[in-house]
Length: 240
Image (tube, rainbow, N blue to C red; front, side, top):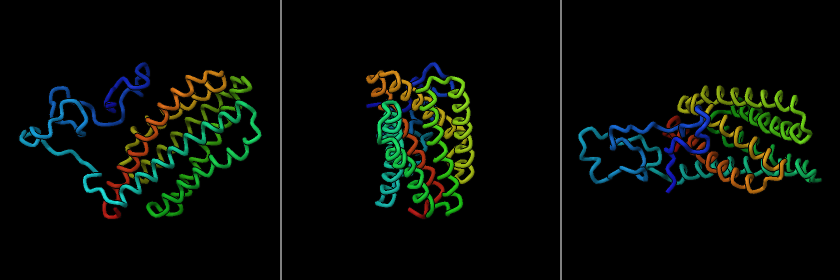
């Protein structure tokens, strides 16, 4: 089974992307692991250890509302990456469906707003929608510039993309203290790195690479969705 704590996951040569945004492994103690699929976890012995403290588990009292929340967030982030890829493919091929596909991608930002309104109210939810919409529009501009091989524009647009990621990070960490700013920033940056790599592979007709990259994008975005879920459950324990 895949171990999310593998520090050498996708980008072992990029220092700020090596940690998987979860608790660091304590090599001196095999009894501090938070999840049962981690090697060294012994559910029979651990409670007998006087130093053992059961880790926080937001899903311990799982109910239909929690499952719906997690499913909704996973669905929205899955749609985010699926329609992003379809837009990249339409731009690369000059497909006539580009306007329709782009409109469907932008609907993703509206759907996130609807999910956020009961939790954060209309003002904050609208702000997130606009930030996420800009994230998607900038990505499309980046692909168009890359297709034209306009390196100057690519560098300029990419700078805007990372600035937008910082704005999203700052905003999310303000509205929910359990969405750690450093963790969100690392996840957002990794998402940008992977998406750019995917676009390059599609534009250069490296289709096998694009498939492999999408697998990585999907795993990474589901981790992000689960992080969103955990933060919401911690912030609003009585709502679920």
